[in-house]
Image (cartoon, rainbow, N blue to C red; front, side, top):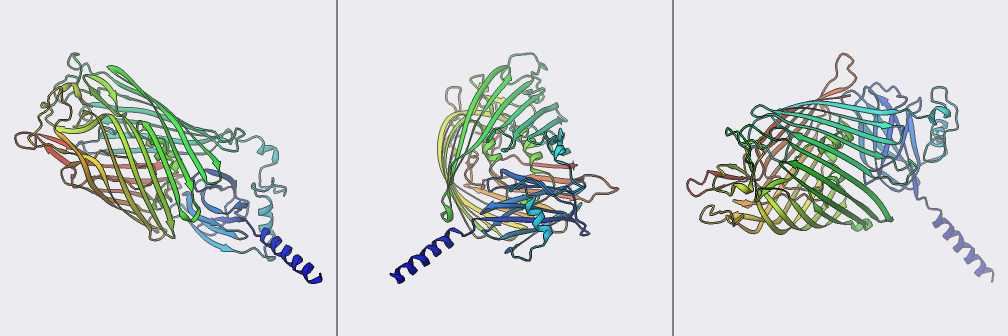
Length: 600
């Protein structure tokens, strides 16, 4: 009997010890300048693995901060302070019963974050204990510090806080520009991000582009509103409003006559567009993450066209086995899903805040319009996509398969379009290309990729797949007004790409290079993957962002950018019944652009 009682006591103690295993950890850190001076009042933001803001705090007079009692997971931290470049670090693992310690050094040019892990002990200093006790993740601050704001002031948040702004000037060659882009030869823009009353995030951006051949090309304005999840209304949606106007749209080169209209020469109308998007997230189960919403678009150009595009993405976490991702989109491009898909690791330390880029990117493209029987139409694509992703150390494996049904599909053409039905051709008046409506088609495909994180500065990825596309039919164009796309034959074709993203430690230069290959003489309409980061961009492409040092006490920083697309002019498919060069199908226009950004 005594033996049995002793065994039961030992078993209960063992179970109690198992239940006592820590399931949370602490994230500690200190913020200093390049000289080692602690920085008071630096803003520290904590994001979860889905890039959602989960907590924020400011540093104490000794530069320290802490997030206590965090569930075991992977987090990202962003630190910003006036007159310094923001610092960003992702992939920070919070381990049970351990402290993840960050040493953050802010500078005007080379901000960096060092990460180490420690096990708490009785030797923890009183300063760290006070920081943990004052952590917003556990309880309100109870220690009185004369340098900090009083509790009554905290109850009255500033009307505007955390404000950042960016001004940009850009220019490029007047070549075969993408008809989906609003960028002209010369362009200026601005972006502003601010927090209103402590809970409401507002981002505003505007652009003005001018084309030397055709006058004003584009004027646009975008506003993005979101509310913090702890703002008192649960998990609120993100709302994006975009308006755009293009003057002299559709004016033929040299003819002064509108494509698809019978108006007098020079009477070029204006293209006006407006879109409203709502993006929401939900976590119905511990391992299930939902992203869903809807985008409504309205276009006026001689006629009126509109569409409503619902979208959905479901991510199912399988622990160490990876994750399955299911995505659905019906209508236009899934811009909201791609905007919240995450960023490459080499791009994570961007000097300019990511929230500024969100609004700027919303203004980068025109709606997907074309003419069909002399009527304005919007391309509509019904997409089903299934993906799988698994991380193994510093390597990420991903595979995606898709099926899409497209109506009012479009091709970009350059050259003599007189052989085509003029009622299905739309000239944008901005670039040297036209849009041709090929009607309805269906296709499917798959793409597998491997992403290797070499270190914190270099990331490489390769991808291979097969996708539905078209080839030029034998016998030339042979197109009449009753047979759309007769000069194209459908089929499945090979695609592959290699990508490199890198950042230099000392100069802060961020460099991106990619090469996309596809079967020769094949036309592969672009598919925007929403279940993995890999994509296929034909030809050789480079992008460079170089921060410039501050001078004369300038509060912000300058950055030079360069974007070189399809330098080898690959992916052009020649059509025509005589010389074979009278008409080209352009899959990825060759373009060279540069710009100067000032962020403050």
